Image 1 (cartoon, rainbow, N blue to C red):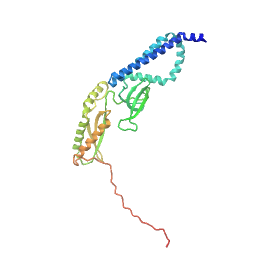
Image 2 (image 1 turned 60 degrees about the horizontal axis):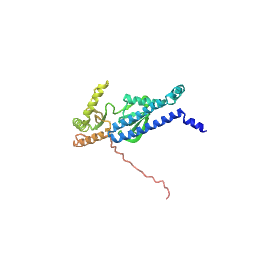
Image 3 (image 1 turned 180 degrees about the vertical axis):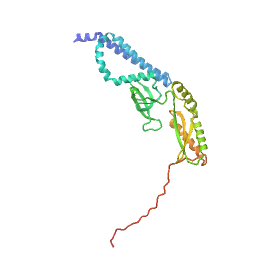
Image 4 (image 1 turned 120 degrees about the vertical axis):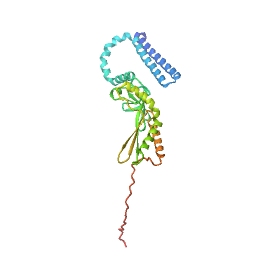
Length: 303
């Protein structure tokens, strides 16, 4: 028994396995210490995140090279066995392999980056982490309107970048076009209405125009796309019910709801200040109910 234990302890293969385990543990501890140092000294969130990810990736690569160097003598004998098992492993881990391939695509093909607002695998939210297998989103929407966070953190497999369209709200052009429709009663001053909506748009969203124009110029230079207008525009349509003034404008993708609130608040205030020259139209109808006649019949025949 003692002889068997002694042979096992002095077996070169066991020694290499122990050395590999010690080396992997040392790399893990070193990477963890470096990540803590980075977290305490780098204040910028984006830079800190990228440096910590780079440290983790470097630790993984160093671990692979360490294992290859220590177990190089045994790799030759494992070649045949790995070749036979490769097909089965590939089939069993096809989703994992696709997720790793998706991570490579995301890292080098610029599908999205941390901080972007995307729709991935049917989930819309802000990217807060990109892992080797999964992308982590802070979800927006669902039961919450206005593109606001709902509090759920969702992890989506990276393989979805090959299965479904990836919608990026903030990649090359970090603005969105949005519209509001203002219904105005027939007979009101249409020219005055257009002027006050245009004036309010300039006050509320005019600050986005310059930045949006510069960003859109880069998009036009990078892609085959028309040079669209980013300044606020007001268009008019009319039907038998009312005049519809549609305000189209660009807005930061993170401020869509608050901007719409500010626009409506100022437009309503401006309309109230026109002293009846401009009146919001309504679909409410007042219907007069017909009069009712009630006759009471006494069926009691007792004297």
